[in-house]
Length: 427
Image 1 (cartoon, rainbow, N blue to C red):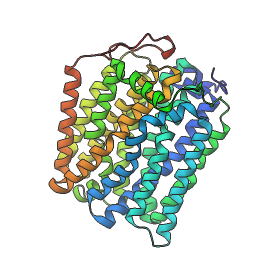
Image 2 (image 1 turned 90 degrees about the horizontal axis):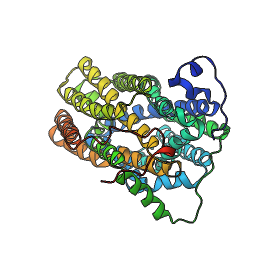
Image 3 (image 1 turned 90 degrees about the vertical axis):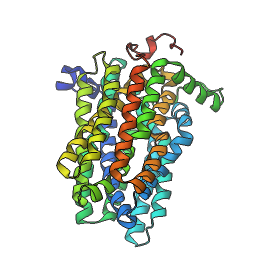
Image 4 (image 1 turned 180 degrees about the horizontal axis):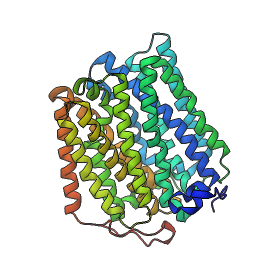
């Protein structure tokens, strides 16, 4: 039973896509996450510029992503077990404190003139470790604070926090970086984590563990993995996400190098480029939200993978900001269409007792496999060029999409809700 719900009136009760906002707890979670993510994007812009300014090396940029995602690679499947076994309220608040402390320490080191690149790598590793537990825990809270019939719309609404912040944060970050410098960006990020800490403590819904106990941790992890890989639909989604994670998402980590060396942009130009990705992401989420009740999620996943490959291929050919901004818009649009639709399907196709562990597999496909591509393509960009690395990744995404379509269509039917689904189809 969802606790802490009340009628928000107006649009929330009139439009099915907005009904999740009728829940007080969902509104708190949404607002807290948005504030927190704005700060994260402010820091990302400043930190990426700082690293490339110090090193002029795309491989060093890639290493930040490698260190942040490496814990997900090693611990990702176990993270869902923590989300399922521990109280999500304290898990969410505790991880935000770790994130805030990291930003404050890096900001202080920069202010004192002692910040070195290896400090950023250590900070990225600490954030990555905390993030492996925070992401599945935070995402699985959504199903606790909205009614089951609103979950399909609540997932893209929840994802809008990150992507609205992707529009606002880089613009603020580019301006702050150019006007006040790096340390202000770090300190602003540290303060914004208070948003999610406050939300976690104020939510009224029961966020305690529903784990009954008695089962070893390894058995719990394997249970979630087996459920994901035995269900043909979840397995297909998992493999498609792995392909995009390895072959496409590296471009985000290389954006400071692309902006400076390929497009000739300055600090605020980098913020604008990142903002265009955010505009694409928000446009995708609005589309997914409006189509949330339509039985076309499988079609959205496959077509968006093709679109992402074409957008990156177009970006590899751009040498001026205008066309590049268009390609970045569509890269954000198609990536978020696929990832958010996949997230929704992972939640719809998993029972409540396994949801944290199944979502952890989604997160692992998105972030845990990513370090292979981030560092690999960073290494490749240093040796053959940024544009050539982008073209290589785009080609591999398109090949993966063709293989997914050729292997069949297990995504045609989606069970309406996990409580009512039959035993998964085995391959």
